[in-house]
Image 1: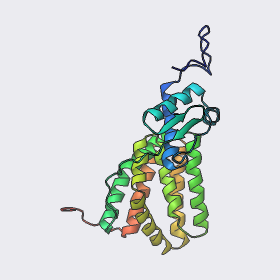
Image 2: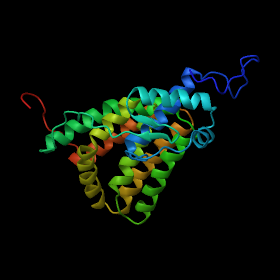
Image 3: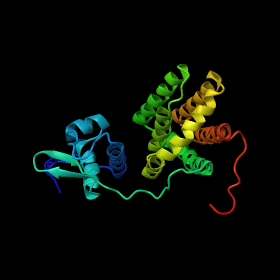
Length: 251
């Protein structure tokens, strides 16, 4: 154990008190997300401990506990006297076959309705200022696109991914990332369907996203869950024209 920050003859101060597990877990997930996002690329040196601790607003022992967990999982490694670096990890891909039919898009919507409604509810209860800022940034990109009468699948996906990340549960985040290309197909077709209605359709969809953001920002879990469910169902209805495919029987 590293005791360089402790004076064994005095009670630990706030700055040197051992890390609280809950806070260290939160910092772990923040750094984990940055690594999986590519914000910290493989083989790149992480910012100094002092910089990270100040950015996250935690003590260095808390940060070190999070980094130790990342090291234990093989996501980062240390170089003597040089700091921590991101390790290149080749994880096994999730087994999602490529989208081949319109029925696959409908199935993707079904899955999204299940996981994203729960993610929105959790995000409303667990979001912090950084998470809110990330969701709001994606929303502002969608607003600019709407005003220009275009649909941006990248901003749309970034909005939904930021909510999954705000839930502070890596399984939501990982699932959406694994489905990125599948979701993009549905978003692109949905965007094309909106363009047939001109600015009105784009503005309605933006308002749906805005309402979800407001509910999460204000900590209204049940409202966020309902609004996300309605948004995804409406998106599916707009894409399929209100007529869903019978998915019974063989795949």
